[in-house]
Length: 119
Image (cartoon, rainbow, N blue to C red):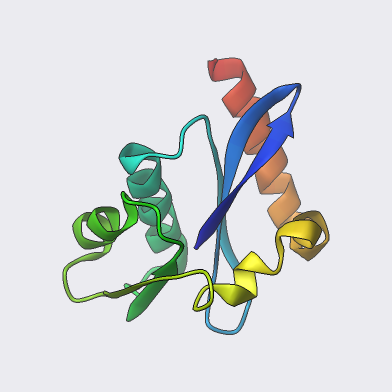
């Protein structure tokens, strides 16, 4: 799981993304903030999409992620926090648009629209 800041309609927001162990996109989410609530929402969405709890969650070192993983995915999920362990998705930053599948882009664009209308 990783997030990157993107500009949507002239406003900066965070694009959260998760991939599975094979590198397939699992979930995306736009958020105004990079905090505990956003992390919990994202993990809950990803869990709903996949339908099963992962064995391990890899994130960068943001302070809210360990607690969000425990509270959303459960205490039995191993959490790793480092950029090198999360390297597959970290390398994708320059190409994040190209890496998203067409149907995933449709979801992202719908969420952008919802995000912009809720502000």
